[in-house]
Image (tube, rainbow, N blue to C red; front, side, top):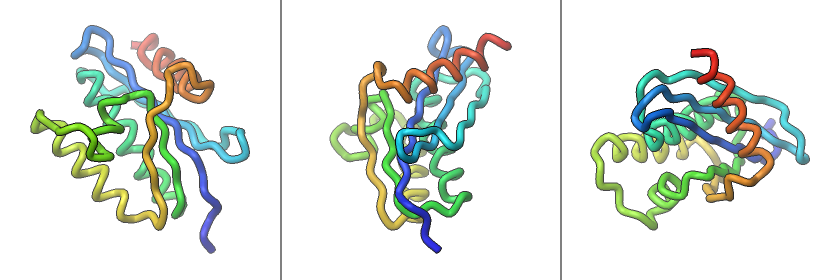
Length: 136
């Protein structure tokens, strides 16, 4: 059985870029969060942490057997690199983009979109990141 399409919102934070970093994501269906996750990453740049959020959200969506997903992030850089609108200049980020593309092949339908950091679900992810970092 193929599960319905879901939306995934991701965010990340790095204090003292690079510095202590965390990411968070939420799975949303019918404007309600039904799954959320956050994790401390150690020392990373904000861009590295944003990619970790995307990669781990994709892994979890695949693990939960979703086949149709829409991913939203407030990271313009990551989304535009994944969508081929921006070149990827740094080798460490090239590897992350390649991982996102590899994981994307699992899904029947997938899209990546940039949204404002004012988005309600992005705000929730942001608070989740802050909570993880405040514990460190």
